[in-house]
Length: 200
Image (cartoon, rainbow, N blue to C red; front, side, top):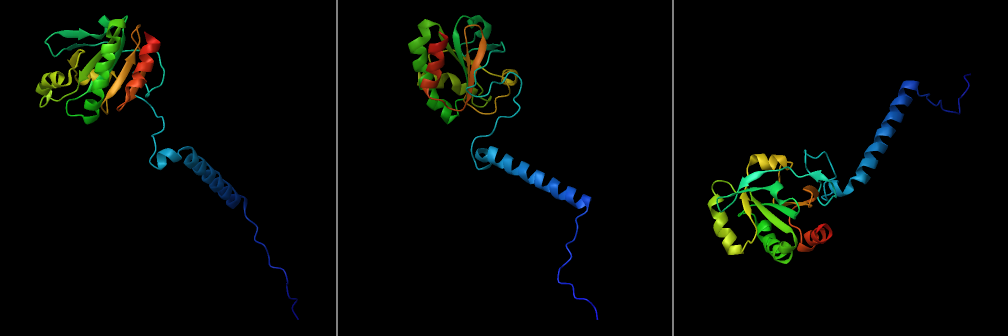
C-alpha cells in the first residue's frame, strides 16, 4: 500500500531563472520611473530638454553665449553688421511675412522700439521669406509701421543660430554681444520688456 502525499512539491527556481526575473523587475521599475518623469511629454505636454544644436539657447534660459556675428543686406539696400550694435540691448527676431504668429507679435516689437529705442535698445528683424515672398517684405513693413531695421536672412544665419526650426524665434542679446535668452514661438511684450529693463 503506497503512502499518500498530502503536501505538493514546490518547484525550486534555478539561479538562471531567478536572475531573469530580477532583471525583468529592474527594467519594469526603470520604465515606470521614466513614465512618471516624462508624463507631460508622453501625454501631449512640452518636450523635455534634449541635445541642442551649437549656439542655441533653450527658450528663456539665462546664458552667456557670444551671439554669432553677421553682415546681411537690409531692405533699403545697405548692410547691417550685428557687432556694430555692441553697447546696445538687441532683440533678433526671425520672422516671415506669411507667418501669422509673427504678424501678431510685430506690433509689440514696434512699441518696444518706440519706448526704449532712445535708451540703447534695438530690434533687428531677420526675414526668412523665400524668393517667392521676399518682394512682399517692404510693403509689409510699411503696412505694419515697422520702425526697426529688417535684414534678409539666409541659410548661413539660420544655421549659425542653431538651425531655426520654427518662427517666430527671438534672441535677446546684451550690451556685450552675449545671448542671454531665446524664445521659440510668440511671446508677450512683457517677457521681452523684463529683459530690456534688466539689461539697459
